[in-house]
Image (cartoon, rainbow, N blue to C red; front, side, top):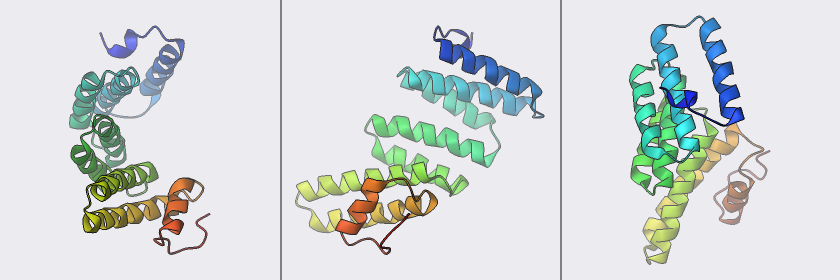
Length: 173
């Protein structure tokens, strides 16, 4: 039984019913519909904190999905799980894949910047000033890209860019 058929939550049940209706009326092939079911089940498992199950569903959705934009969101969600589990290198690789497929994904760009900033802070604490500055510069480049795509978001990042002298613009929004 698919995960979404087991949900007791009214919102999850409502989402599942609506998604099933949309799947039936959309002019798409069976493989894409099956990929969406796995993706939907992955999101449900992820929301419940069942990360291994979510990753299994996302892997299956990725195997089936051919649309680059849809693949980017699958990769993005997989990266979120790895980042939350502390596997930043795996998360960075998945975010990079997502960005390659969908360069206009500010949330992925922001999350890459957050990881680089975090790694920069750790390097700074360890007394590795050159490494820290290098990581902060990487964070700045990703934040600038994210802010260009979503100028009203990432206010803290905008402030950090300005305070650290990494901003090339006075006002982003």
